[in-house]
Image (cartoon, rainbow, N blue to C red):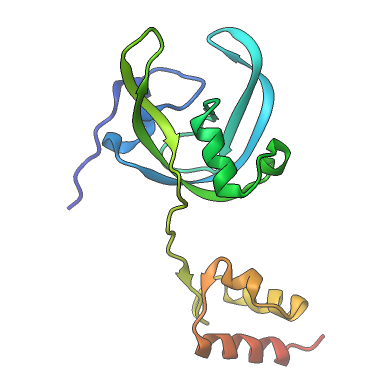
Amino acid sequence: MSEKIKTHWKKTVDKDWIGTYVLPEGKPIVVKLLSVKYEEVKVKGVKGMYKVAYFAANPYFKRPMLLSANINLKRLEKLTGSPYIEDWASINLDVTLQQEMDKAFGGGKDWALRIAPTLPIVKKEELTPASPKWVTAVARYKSSRKLDGITKFYNLSKENEQKLIKEADEIKA
């Protein structure tokens, strides 16, 4: 039986941006970062140019994240291999969000939401002939004659790789 996750009080307030309160009981989460944009948005009622991270639908939050000028952006540069925001327009990258103690506005210290400095290890689903995506994978291989587009998202045993190739070869053009 799983234990119910507690709700941080900040989750009950309508906020424009995510913060550490999205982390279930402060624990790190893995989410898919779709893009980062440098755009004009309102922060605390004032319009300005900010770096904003957008994420795929996930069970933790629905809003974007403002990126800190130093830590999160430097980490994205390292994780993506590029310092250019334009290269981050369609990242589609699994990242870990975690909390770290940092300087707070007005002095003192407080928890800050950070992108972890290393990529998470995400277990890929095993692709088998019984998998719902098998037919799509066969069709993809038939058209491209490459497995890398499939193995990027799925684990494929040597036995199932041979079956996939054989099925693709048996499809009439």
